[in-house]
Length: 458
Image (cartoon, rainbow, N blue to C red; front, side, top):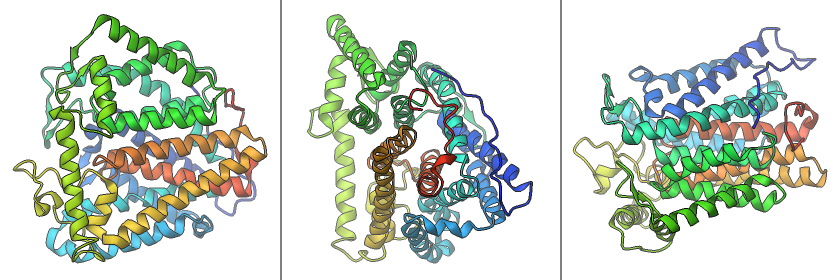
């Protein structure tokens, strides 16, 4: 495993901008990468950095829009096909938000972040179009993110589960100092796994894989959607890169772990683990519960809760009066739909980003959301196929990594409140923007992808 150094890329010759513009863009990308690291490791703790109602995520977005406006030729965004349905999605979301600001105030803007954070995609894509070599810069910085994330994560997971006195933030009493959401972490581990499989980190040792697997065992058994997202990345990576040693070594470690659980009959209760434990039975129940009822209250009850709520949303949208408009952004859907969990009303959206768009923006909102994602992944697949025809392993790896990561995000977002918040939403839309930029660079200047830092894939 190699930890890559972060270097500033050379400026593309012939740019029409002033000499300081590339430096401003690179500095913003550095700041954005620090924010993404904070969200990945610290979760809610990092999200609440700032002064209400302006937190670090909103500040990063406003700063990014200012950087975007400084870029000449930012209309090149329209040259990337998925940008069109994305802009339409943002426009429809604004139309379904403005009427409710006077009623719900900041709550309307809070709910609107599910599409509002999409401006990060436009910013990231524009910065890549301005300096195509920034594709390599972002990949190098992700390579530097991996060792920090994989090393620190087990420590945070243990503290999150076993620290008896976990203080809260003075300005946010419901946010603990050590805050971790298992499904979010599993999505990022899926991205790390895809990065390793395509070979961008070189030879990945048994030690790194063992550390990852131990973390997956501690975290993944608590959350099904995150585990499915992780398995998606592993299966797709193995199918398209069968010669990679990473998935085969990981399978060997998984087999050894399952045998150890079977022989020892190990059962370790996970504190705060939703009634689940580390055991072979728990692994089987988690996998079975994805498609069938297992008889376990901790697994079946949450699934039934989601199904009941989703059926209610379908009834009042597709089959009801909110078909073309939805209920808008601002209303607490859990309260209005009859699925309130606590007196504080902390749950506002259904456990599915697709149902969030359907409930709040109606059928047009859901259709635009689906079209945006389908056109993006179609562009990624098209780029992968063309790179494969050219026998270009570099670009194959880029598109495979982006596609697996995107798939992991969407799988988790289909069963959890994920993209609706900054921890998942900002990461997702930045990844989306990197994909838009990669599609554009591959079509116009594929040689801008620097291969000097890459591992086996180069």
